[in-house]
View 1 (spheres, rainbow, N blue to C red):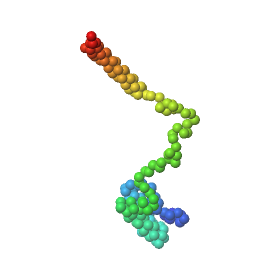
View 2: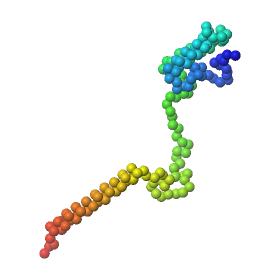
View 3: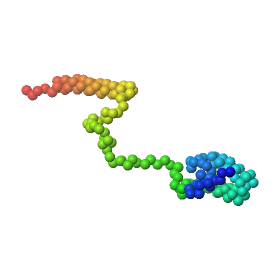
View 4: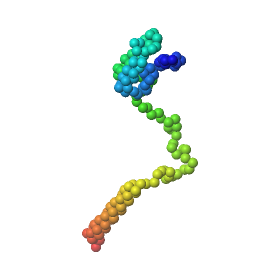
Length: 158
């Protein structure tokens, strides 16, 4: 027995179902699927009864005409509820604080369950501390050198 395109009448078939494609199919995939199925269901080349083959072939033509035109395809996609854009849904517990699901309370700024620092991060942290300490030492040295000279300029009143 030959398979027909509309075997399941309870389910609404879309043009993508008729062409046996996913809604994200490229125009090349749509064209290739139409060509393959049109050879299978064309009334002149199929073993199906002429009335069935004609009806199936007309459905294929209608599907291809809609999906091969970008504007008509966009309108059809909106009609069936398909979106080409991935929509990220917010989590249901968006307003709940992150720390609410932890078993312990931590007053530390960093999360104690966070990953350890990598070697590059440790080196950068070491260089930052070294730079800060060097700047502090230079500032104290300059203040001491200028402070001694400034104290010598100020003479106590006699």
